Length: 382
View (spheres, rainbow, N blue to C red):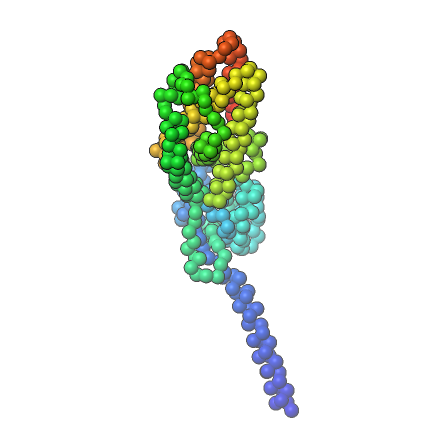
């Protein structure tokens, strides 16, 4: 009888042991599921005798803190694993995050840090005993496949470069299609001598704006300007209140494409507003044909100018990545000079067909060109 009870008891214990094994495996698996993406020890900084941050060298215990600057955008989707001895403190951007009474390891979600901080944060670990050999700060990821232990980290600059290359290809294909499909219109629009000539030819006065060819050139114009704005604008650019809903800067290739389409639509709306303004003013001043000539000259001068900027950006883009502020200011000044030069050319071209005094033509140019230019500059730079 006792042997039977002992047998049953051992049988039940064996079953409980087998049932508990998956639970053991799960707890152990959770602790070992992460993999190290990057050990941040080589990026540590410490404080020297003059309270300046200097690179940390193991064994040289100069200060009671070590810190590092972390680019959150680069390691998005991963976590920070921080292991420290007791009597340590963790600071994020000079704000206390946690005190450690005992040796412990914590894991922080990088994406949650991006929600509350800038793209770059500064992590600082205070250790009164300077026991930094027991401090470990690593970028880790979570996954079950060993192949994920060395994931490819896509930098924000690499994403922008991919968009830059794809955008160039799309625009160049657009140029080729326009050149092949609408060769006659292409030669007229990109004829430099006719653009900056003060004389008006007879075929210019018979221009029709709403045609298949001109709509195609308008789409290309909107894509061109929006592409250049995305490439040249620094990541810290504050967008005007009208387009503040746009996500800038983008953090993925698909967001770059979406931003391109959104900005192109905004440029299209501005061009349509310009067209309606010229049509209303042309009817008010009884300009008839001149209002169409004005809009046509405005568009082809702008196309030539932005095409020249496009070629310059292609040539100098590697340098552009390090001096975006300088190039943006140069573009603004260049655009202002071009706009003033365009106003002078338009004035002399329109004055040849004007049947009224120059004061009326000057008033028309002011309302149609100068005032919108000043309003646009105030919006972009204010």
